[in-house]
Image 1 (cartoon, helix red, strand yellow):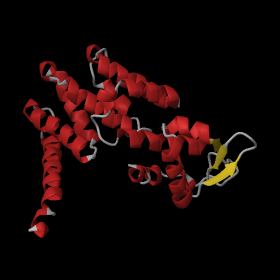
Image 2 (image 1 turned 90 degrees about the vertical axis):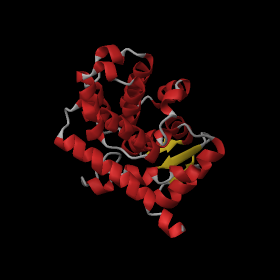
Image 3 (image 1 turned 90 degrees about the horizontal axis):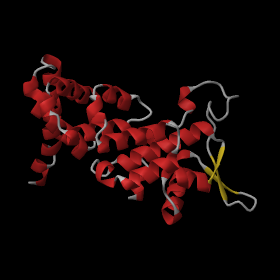
Length: 235
């Protein structure tokens, strides 16, 4: 019986995605597909998947059907887009959202969070996100995605980073940070050093950005997926 049940779930998800893709490709401006696209946003949230093209299609349809716009769905689309940073997805989505909707409190909050991330102001970001947990925590994987982005930024900026700077950027402290560092040392080539009376220093592997003398090679840059694989272990 177990062998019959296991393949059914992925097949169901695959069928939903295939159907939405066809709807978007064949008739993207048909308002009748609005419910399907809204359900697909919720499916992306539940399954921790992401399809920007389908979400952009939904936002375009909302422009023609403003009375049918769901603020909750719009917010979820923006949260998923924010999780895709450094891709410009958030700006692409925001461009399709009317100004009056952007002035709603939860949308304004997400815009502020986006500005903090784009400017590398991680402490302000985490402080603001803590005040708006009802928005961001409704989308699983949000915190891990932003932490991965923060590590990505640090890896392009620093050769060595202090433990305090790292803790502030990824919003992890104490034993959880110790565990994360152990995983980074084992899997990503990080090295831990003791600073002279200033706590722990983390040596980040060299890449063309934090060591400009290196030959330009995109393979040297720390991939986001390497970081992403670490965070589920901490849970």
